Each structure stands twice: as C-alpha cells, then as structure tokens.
Length: 358
Image (cartoon, rainbow, N blue to C red):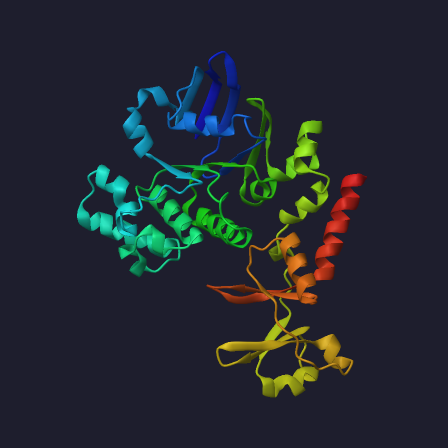
C-alpha cells in the first residue's frame, strides 16, 4: 500500500503538487490524468524520490520513503517511461538483467528470471541476443516492461509508457498490460494524458488540476458522477459512450452453440442450439444461425473472433466495421467460450442509460 500524507512539492515559490492525501491499494492500477503541468509526473517521481517532496510524507507498507536508502528504494520499484530508455548498445538480455545484476543475483537465477519474463511478455527468447534497434516500437515497450519487472517489485511506476506508440499497437499493448496485471497483481501508478486509456486500464483514476487532486475514484463512479465541470470537460461530451468501455462482453455471453463439421450442416434442423460453428480440422470456416437456417438462409458467415476481456464499445465498432451482428468469444487457454449479439449489447446499454436517468 502507498499512502500520501499532506504531500506537496514546490519549485521556487510555486506549488507543482499541493497537499495530496491519498491511498493507493495493493494490487490495483491507479491512473493519474490531467492537463499538461497539472503535477501528475511530479507526483509519480516523488514515490521513488527522483523528485524530493517539499512537504509531507509518502509511506510504502507503513514505512516512510525517507527511511529507505534512496538507491535501494529505486531498485525495489519498477519504472517504465515513454521513451522506454533501453540501452542501445546492450543486448535485450543485458537490458532486462540490469537490476538483478545490481542486486548481485546469481547468474542462474538471472537467466531463469529473464527467460520467464520473455515468456510472460509473449516475445521469443531468441530476441535476447538482439539489440533494441532490431525490435519494433511495441516490442521495445514490452522489453521496457520486462526490465521494470525483472527484480519482481511490488510497485510499478509507469509514466505515459504507451504514449509514443501508434494507435493500433497502443491498443495491443494496453490489452497486453491488462492481462499481465491479472497474473501479477502489482501495485501500479500509471500516468497518462489519454482518458480512454485511463478508463480501460485503471482500477481507480485520479484527476489532477493545478497540483491538486480533483477526484479520485473508480472509473464507473467518475463517469456516472463527475465531481465538477472541469472533470466533465476532461471526460468530454461522449461521457456516456466511454462507459461502454467498462462493460465486458463476457457478462452477456450466450452458450447455446455447437461446433460441427461441414457435413453436419444439413443436420442443423435436428439440433437444439442457436448458433453452429463450422470447424475444418484446425480452422473455423464460419458460422450459421439456426434462425437463418430455418428461413432457408443457410449461408455460412464469417466469424468475428474477440477475446473474453473485450468491452462493449470495441466489440460494437468491430462488428459494425465487419457488417456482422455476432461475435464469437475465443480464449487461448479454453477455446471457444460462446458468442454475443450486437443487439443484446445495445439493449443492455440503453437499459443502463434509462436507469441512470430515473
């Protein structure tokens, strides 16, 4: 647990951060967001004493940061920045192993940890002998995360880590990090300027302005009940649309499906399920809805696959772009889990809207 107690930072005579009193819970991602100059990065850097507080205190597991040796404190906290900061003349192995080597881990322990991390971030171990220039931007950012996790710290500080990545790879990295956090349960303080990113990955969001914390709460509470006009403006006119990113499709999964081969299509009339997925050896050829089959429309439609953590908004956009009304949920570990229909997602959102307005 990280606790801020009357925390302030002055540069000359001006407060960059003013009188923060907050608690960041263990195992949660807390996102700090606000306009440029609001104090979010300064706040982040005070946790590992890259910037020294002017007033107040920070406690980590009830121990003041001033009771730690500065270097030991920094080595015990993972740190990821937008520029990644990989050493260009070091191999990927050397970049990841820097902190364990500084902590004087044995070579065998370091090798094991580096290999574990490469598996965790879904990059091949053959990359370990490469240099950063041989990797894509997204791959380098994953290595940056692996390096921050190398000593298995309880706390991870992330300062706009995906800010310099193109939109497609940025979404992929966000999905990757959300999945990673489910497994690791680190205490993460994450700085961003992107409200969509904050809502997508944050367990809690802290909205800052002029060095002060305006609102610190769960994303759904901030979206439903913004504290003041500034928060409303930060969320934008599409605040209700943003709430679609909080609703997960897995809550509306339908399981009345059957996997069949192409020869069984003609037997659909004898089955009781609503959706039939046609499998051809290790591939899927498409799907047929029983209601279409009964109307004489037995055409096989393209399957739109989504993962089990996908949200309403991304699923609706994907289906509209494909001209489809059904998405099949596929998990790497468990295979096909079921399907969702776009009309069910829209009706659920409309119902929520009605309940909020009454």
